[in-house]
Amino acid sequence: MDIESVDYSTKIPNNVNLVEDRQVLRALESWHPGYIDWWMDMGPEGFQQALVYLRTAVSVDPKGWAKFDYVKMPEYRWGILLAPKEEGRKIPFGHHFGEPAWQDVPGEYRAMLRRLVVIQGDTEPASVEQQRHLGKTAPSLYDLRNVFQVNVEEGRHLWAMVYILQKYFGRDGREEAGELLQRRSGSADKPRMLGAFNEATPDWLSFYMFTFFTDRDGKMQLESLAQSGFDPLSRTCRFMLTEEAHHMFVGETGVGRTIQRTCEAMRAAGIEDPHDIDRIRNLGVIDLPTIQKKLNLHYSLSLDLFGSEVSTNAANAFNASLKGRFQETKIDDDHRLEHATYPVLKLVNGEIKRVDEPALTAVNMRLRDDYTDDCQRGLDRWNKVIGKTGVNFKLELPHVGFHRQIGEFKDVKVSPAGVLLDDSAWSRAIGKWLPSKDDGEFIVSLMKPVSEPGQYADWISPPRLGIDNKPGDFEYVKIAA
Ligand code: BYC
Image (cartoon, rainbow, N blue to C red; front, side, top):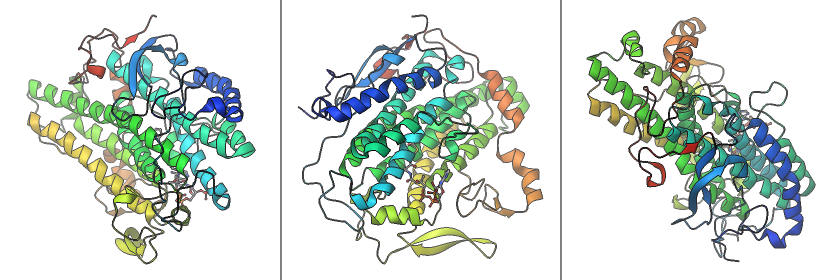
């Protein structure tokens, strides 16, 4: 079979020759009904019968891998797609640097690898659960289609991890695949595994911030798993990254359009001061200081997803050649980190300082630094949007110690500017830095659905271009289908 095209003859589209892998095909087919039950229960609420203009992967050729058409979401063809095998691929880092990439799970690392796959898998359905109520308040059919596109692809990413579990981890893989459908975002008894995936997504600005910041953590984690010595995982992640790019686009342009609309409304009303919040809110748009607070929240929650700055788990995964660094193959060093150090931000005698740590235990920190740089580039683009309108305001990333629950700063209070605070100073100032209940209620009050083709809610600007080059009044979702 041609690896670049996808076989649709089995119930589960795939480019891994499932037709000849009967055992795995049967395992996936028996997992399928549970997945559909989960999707019907926990997927987008109220739109399961709508016709949505979605892209479906039909190939893994980077130049043309998707086709667009109207689909009812429960009929979306969730499939198993791996990037093409690189013949002769060598393991690019760790203890096994230079050895041929593994096509099977190395026995000694089985548990560690399974844990990484399960954690990755767990985030995918979690995000669908978090976003399931958004359809009811979408600012346009364009945005409605985008959240559904993100949701079906996160569903596919769950399939991607479940394939790895079913094919390579036998019975315990099957059990883990079942558990992935049992946990629920925000549940008290069976929560999702990582913190940010148990938070609510109550409004569309939260959704855009999530797809900007949290999906970007997804990108970084997938990039480092794409380096894996375990080749099937590497190939799976490489294709997931192709889809992931659109999710971050949705986030970046969603926040960008919100900012644009706010600044334009301020200019039209002659409001110069971005902190004149009541007057700005009276225009029906979200003031920039509140957008900054949402940004502070989502950035800090997403930083927690990188684990501790200094981590033996991370060092073990790197040493075992299971999880590498961002763009590992482009880094010019020994790829084993035997003697290297890396500067880590730490608390030393009540002060925040950079301390050189063995680079091996600091790989989470390094990935997080790469993430911060990537986020900053996005903020620079948002600040350009603000700058062009002439409004005097600049969005900033808060200090990495701000509002943390994992790692070096979890037990201290740090301001967005990086100053250590006592509890009372923190409590006094927190309302300036994180969204308050009132802020949340104000944003929710703007979330009125708009479902006329080509129309947009008043708090957000239209996009510059349509999806798949469609015209402005294209009906991206046929709701009453
Ligand atoms: N919440 O050594 P430590 C995505 C646990 S997003 C709760 O500090 P490590 C997506 C940790 O499990 C990407 N617990 O950290 C985005 C460990 O517990 P055990 C998802 C946490 O292991 C949007 C203990 O604390 N993929 O794809 O070096 C939409 C000490 O751990 C958290 C991955 O994350 C937390 N935030 O690194 C849809 C990649 N952080 O084992 C999808 C796979 C740490 O002692 N996962 N803990 O019981 C990993 O690489 C690593 O597990 C982590 C943590 C980076 C998450």
